[in-house]
Amino acid sequence: MTTEKIQSSKPSHSKEFSKATLDKIWRKGEKEFGFIFFRRDRFGVSMSRKLFRKKTKYGWEVDYCIPLEEGGTDTVDNLIPVHWSNVGRKVSDVPVQNK
Image (cartoon, rainbow, N blue to C red):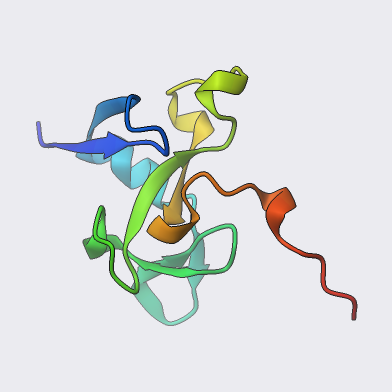
């Protein structure tokens, strides 16, 4: 079974996941219309499936919905794909735009 090392926003928390588990996490990203290998994170930033753990324009990491120190877990239900620059960022950090 192939595994890829996942590291959270906190370097001391790391875990290896199977390819199947990593695929489940990847599929949580929002699909990009017309692009098979691209998704958007919860902040709307594009990511490429092939650029996992790469600090590039479309690179991505796995992050926690609820951080471990706030009672979150390492289960798939609590893990999401995010652009590497958004690791550890909270949705509440994003300013609300008035329309």
